[in-house]
Image (cartoon, rainbow, N blue to C red; front, side):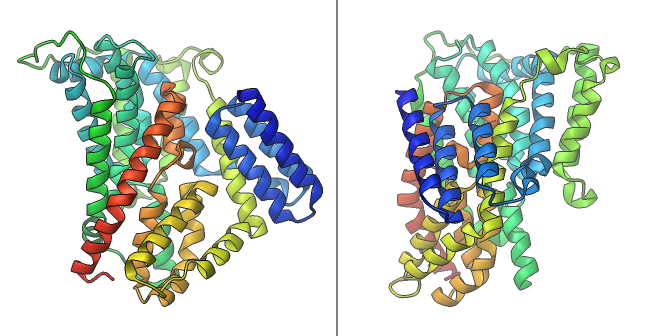
Length: 450
């Protein structure tokens, strides 16, 4: 089945590329083919990534520095650093130590573990200004916690905990203006382009309805995903202190410094990617005692980095040839903004923003959407800030995992089954969209936002 799908996708994309000289159609065909292969995992990620690179080089629509620009982005190097940090947490046993401490709270209760991971992910969202570092920290610990609870890899309990850690660390945290890269990108662009400022409190209140709903829906779905284990240990009455080896203490110091720098980036201005990369360099020094000299060959898998670079490549090439703007201009003329009701305007803007983010990725969509805020503002009669908030709801609604780099990193670090995560993303996004968008519209009416 997978081979047939791969062959079909490849043939269709090849026919489109050969039969037309229109660069936009060619790029669109290659992009859709590549993203479909990523979503279905019909081919290994590295193979699909290399297909995307060579296809764009073959049609010669963008310079090589644009096609391979993904390797120069902060997101790529944040992932590289994160893979090293995640491997260190696992191989050193630190993740297992922290998991044993967490196990003192959860016992063998799947429900308590889901609750613990959900609240931890939300708290980290308020502290650390990028989802990728949060996922990097959470996944090895969650794997160790699942092991402490005697959950077999591949079981529903094991998969449920992994999905809890990655989803709750990302999706509901869009309630915080500093928590996720797409929001940071668009809010910053809005300030530069229009001199409009959105305060932390106003953002929190305006986005509260849909993000509270996201938390509730995901929590219920994740609880329902697997029933409690048959053997449930009584919750321990006291918390055992961590008993760390010297290697684990050194790693904990590096990890603590990294989290502190991630949480205070607005004060020192050091990007999260360079913090992660610096931490990785320290950990990879053989004399530091965390990794051996052969670690880069035997302990760390960088294949997922090619996936991230190729997704960034798609976004860069689309931007280079103006395809993103073409799609946006076409959409804004067909959305009928300002012609019916404010509810339709919100639904249309959210739907368009979400669709655009799935054609590229959420951070890239934010870049394209910011310049469109003024035309949408004029069409709807809303403020530029209200339009930006509607954009935010759209690109934070994740129907497919490939749309969000943090989810891809979670898949890479913990081998989360792509099918289960895709179903969770799809169902939860449909439910929260159907209920959450009208709820947000009503809230915004009461607050006078629109």
